Image (tube, rainbow, N blue to C red; front, side, top):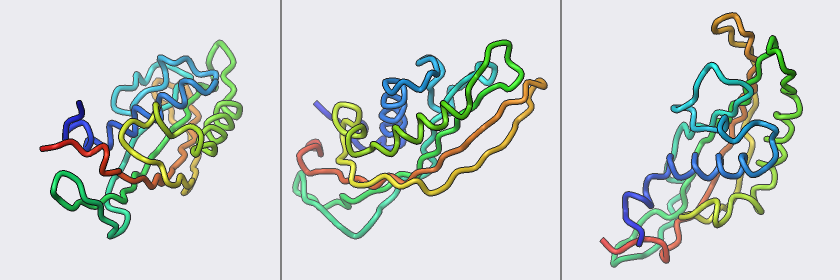
Length: 163
């Protein structure tokens, strides 16, 4: 049975959902290296870091559940960082990983649904920008591409637990 804490923990739920989609999508990054940004080991490459930077109310649309009205149209701002090491002893194809991540996120209608997304109905996923850069911790020349997405979703009355 669901709880309010499970349902409204939107940041963690979206991170877990996107990590699951990327891990199952053949990015060539080991599953152990596709993680929430807060738990990433900065010494392991290639890696994919997933972070939800913001969640909020997307419109004034409301729904009714458990004898109460609530705002049911929500959004999440998501950042996905693809990180490779350009001086690694084994070749890490940054372009290939980046292309696979973009491809998987473009298929959001098929991928960001149950069972990957437990609580929410995915309405739209828009890529809002991409940036590239180089970090140099420990002189290892990490190439980074950061993707940003806006996910719009609904919380249906059927999933809202009784208080």
